[in-house]
Each structure stands twice: as C-alpha cells, then as structure tokens.
Image (cartoon, rainbow, N blue to C red; front, side):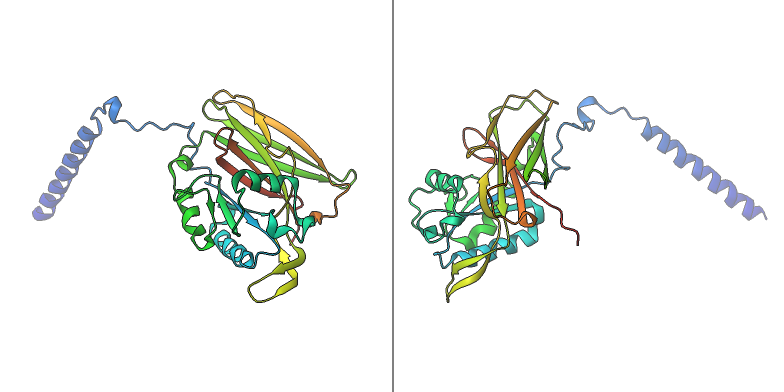
Length: 285
C-alpha cells in the first residue's frame, strides 16, 4: 500500500513538472522578423499554372498527326494545365483553305514566317532552350514542364476567368471575362479564340492520305480581334469585367464541339501569362 502511494505521488510530481516546463516554453516571445506572415494577395497555391501550346499544322504535313497525338498524351497527363490550339496555316494547309483563318495566318507570319518545317509548336510564346518555335515535337513535353515550373508561373499578379454563353435564338456567343489584380497590373492584352474539335476531313499521314481524319482543337477565329484587346491599367485589389459577342450566323460549325480559349498576354513580349479553355455548350453525359 505504501508503495502504491509513493508511486502515485511520484507520478503527480512528474506531471506537474512537465506542465511547468511546457508553460514556460509556451511563453517565449517570438521576434517580429521570426513570425510567419501570410500574404493573402499571392494566390499561387490556389491557381493552377497553365500553358498554351500553339500547334502549327496542315493537311499536307505527314508528321503532324504524330505531333497531335503527342500533344494529346501530354494533355491527358496535365489536364486543364495544358491548352492546345491547332492552327492550320502556311503552305502545308494550301489544300484545305476552309481550315485556315485570317488570325492563324497572321500568327504564322509573326512568329514563324519561314514556315519551312511542320509541325511547329510554340509554348506560351516564350523562348525555351533558345528558341520560340519547336519542330521536334518529341521534346514538347520537356519544354511544357519547364514552362510550368518557371519562376513567372509562381508569381501570379492576377486571376483570370471567363464565362461563355450561347443563345440559340440569336445564334450568338457572349463571353464575359473577369480579371482580378493582386498587384498593380498594366501592359497586358486579353485574347479570345474560338476552336472546334471533331472536324472530319482529309489529312496526310506517314502511311496514307486519309479522308476521315478527325481534327481537334482547330482554331476557327479570333473573337476580339487578331491580337485581342488591351486591358487598361488596374490598381491593386481591383477587378474588371469585360464582355464580347460573336455571331455564328454564317458559320457551319458544330456548336456542341466548340470551345472558347482565352488568355492574358504581355503586350510587349507577347508572352502568355495565363490561359483557359471552356466548352461553349456543356454536353450532359
């Protein structure tokens, strides 16, 4: 019995000692420079980094289907972090002018005027490995991952979203775009494109000339002008709402396969800072 009382007194004393030490440590004063300061104006952890792949292609380019397959495989891995736009332009598209667009030809003339080798990929309009245009599509995944992990992708100055709507009555598309600045924002453009997937047509491959090839992510037109629209300077913590409309009355496109691609780019360097893609019509599964 005495042994039990002794052990009990010993346990209580030990607990009181531990509590005293813990209380003493908890009262330590932390200097201001050692405190963790959370800046809620930096939403990099809440916003996924995104990359735009402009895939310049053509019906007469026999290697382009392989490049499209590689791009699709990369997108399967990255999901919405990779947006693909297939741009039919240049001499390899001469047999299918219906796939070309004024905007697409303008981009080719701007970024790749020689157009002597297709497929040609541009990754967020930023030089990678010393070049803007990449004809070796087997390296696209490496370059895309480098872009995703680059410094600029971790220093988001704004957030961008868009909300497309389609009216069957007027056959018009309306896109509302929102921009929220987390710091002062200036010198940027908003670009809106319309793309179509599931387009069945001709395509040369490594083995044959197919007439039932399925083209996806095909650039159809620039909604708000070939080079988009300049965004007026925005102050820190400000928001902006923009609205654009586009008529489909003279188009023979499948509205169920149309997508809106929107991106913000640097007005001077043309570098794409953030890109999104939204279906025009959400098809129920």
